[in-house]
Amino acid sequence: MKQAAKMQKQMEQVQSALAAKTIEATSGGGAVKVVARCDGTIASITLDKEAVDPEDVEMLQDMIITAANTALSEAKEISNKEMGSVTQGLSLPGLM
Image 1 (spheres, rainbow, N blue to C red):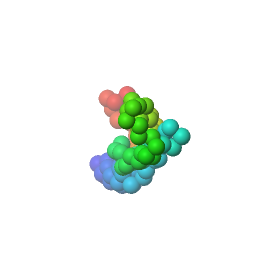
Image 2 (spheres, rainbow, N blue to C red):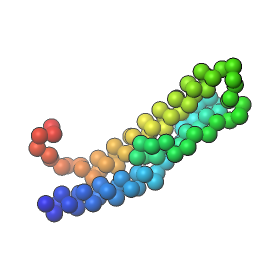
Image 3 (cartoon, one colour):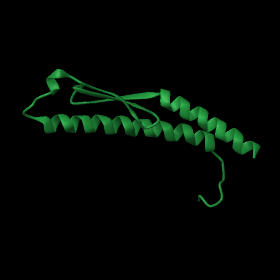
Image 4 (cartoon, rainbow, N blue to C red):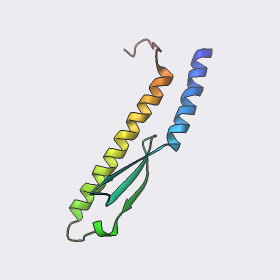
């Protein structure tokens, strides 16, 4: 039980640290910038004014999706790696 309580405290600390870590991704040559937190949330989206073309909204939407997915994917990799370091070597019956 002590080990489980210690691991839970470590996981909470890692989760707090992940909420503060950010990943930045761009698309469209930097026209769209998305900053994602490693807790899986979007911190900000920045658009270059030149990227906003009322005649081609679909391209802007695609650039936002691309940048957001890239940032979230990289953030998830970091999160998995750091959470994995807390649970490394732990054998939980019924999970494998």
